[in-house]
Length: 215
Image (tube, rainbow, N blue to C red):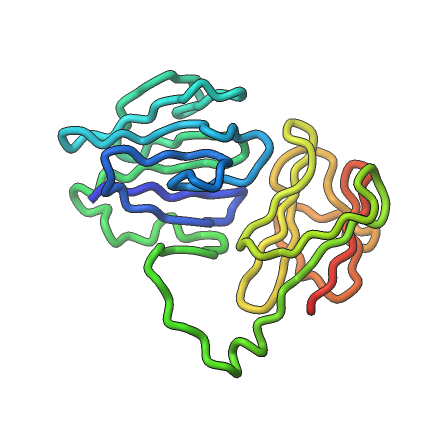
C-alpha cells in the first residue's frame, strides 16, 4: 500500500497510508494532513490515488509544490520521490517490492509514526501528562502565550530562520529547521541537533524572545 513519510528537519513527524482517492495537504484544520507552517497554504496540495498510481497536484498554493527540487502543478510520483511543501519534506513510498516495513528512514526523531489510535491513558498517566507553554516576552507579539499541544510546533520567518519545538514523551526539545540565523537557548546557539528545554528557558529567534514553561 502506498504511503508518505513527512519530515521536518531530521524529525519524522508523521506517516500516512494513502487509502483515499484524494488526500489533501495544507494548513487548514480540515485537511487530511495538517501542516502547521506559514509557508504552507490553507489548501496547498492533494495526493490523488488512481489505478494504483499516486499523483501530487498543487492546488494553487502561494509558495508552490516541488518534486525532487522541481516545481510541479501535477505529477505522477515514483517510489522514493521527495515532495517539498514549505519546510516539510514528504517521501513517497509505493508499497511495492521490499520497501514495506523497512526502517531506513527512521533516523531522527519519530514523533508520530502511526495514525492508529492509542489506548486511553490511566489516571496516573494523565496526571503526569504535563503540557508545555511558550510565552513571548520580547518582540512584536509580546505577552502572547501558546500551549504546545502539537508534537511539533514551528516558529520563525520562512526563508530567513525557522525553528521547531518537538515533544517526545514528557520532554520538549528545540532545534533549527532552516536558515542561518540560529536560535539561541539561554544565549547559546542551537543547531539542528535537538536541545532539551527546561522550566524558564528562553529561546531567542529573529528578535523575538520566548520563555518555556511546563505545567
